[in-house]
Image 1 (cartoon, rainbow, N blue to C red):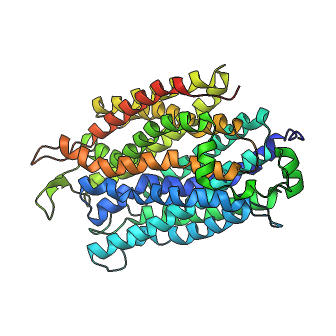
Image 2: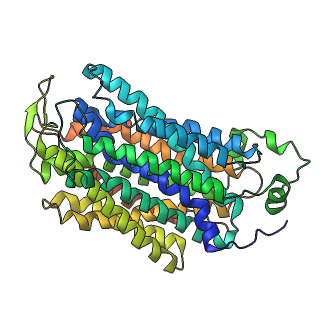
Image 3: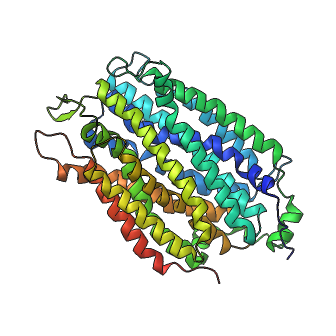
Length: 450
């Protein structure tokens, strides 16, 4: 088997550069979905249900894209065609989703429109995101994979930083941050528009700069017998049975980590609006006490959440440079998750908007580890021609915990809620911190390739 040659830093950079644009789209979705649906009229106890669609789309789409791209060979490459199509669909949907409340529809119709748009947006983002992880597995040797995924982590966090601050930035320069009840503010709508433009430009750059290995060379680098067609027909269930131990042990850690971050994306808006910005409460149509999402305080809190998520991204970038200094990947994983857990729990005790920077810097440490370490451990344990399929299946360890957390989040929040009071969404962030501590404990059972 031929050895994959070392690549220059800029070749590694080009492989992942489009991830910057994809992550802007993902950041805009993550920071604003709860805000959008709350503005449209969703009850806080029902917010988590709107988050089921994104991971559900991912768990279906990513294994299919992985399996199909494993068997795709075109003059444009094997992964890039899927990347490009996914980006085009994402751009179209990004121009539609934030306008869900602007077409004169009823609340119910606007909710349905928003849900359908969200489903297409996350499906397309997943379709565009997965090829970047696969190309690192395809084109980078084992020695450089840690660096390659660190570059990808940096670009991911840089994209997140841009996406998170867009609404705050636009509001700062005078674009309206408030709107009539049920309508999304212009600061959010324009953020999605700008994100869509950046996304397609970044994907075009990667598509032009990256030349994937042709079939024969790829087979030589990965020890594949091109005359053996039997392996190509192996189905996903058989691949799961044959999956290396790293697949399952890292997957267990992933479960607690991604459930925790699903709670963060869902409940940070309400937590910051209630605990820090003192947003007023009202009675909704069912007689429940909820935050007034049309209030200036709520929309200001929504912008500030974008800043907090940007701080998290900065913390992640800083911590990503520290992770390689650890001699043990598992030790780096444990320390990162513990710091993130402390960050989540500390939010319970903070009422100052700037003090929250410390919490989210710590949360960024966990995020940095989640972006780089699982894929480094897994791809080092994989060989053969099913790299894309395995990475697609591994995405289930990201999607399933989010689906579980989204399905149960509303029920758990109801257990914390006292009648006549605003739901204490901060309790869900404390639970997120506990989940990261459990995930840190589970790192000990990870089986790395020796």
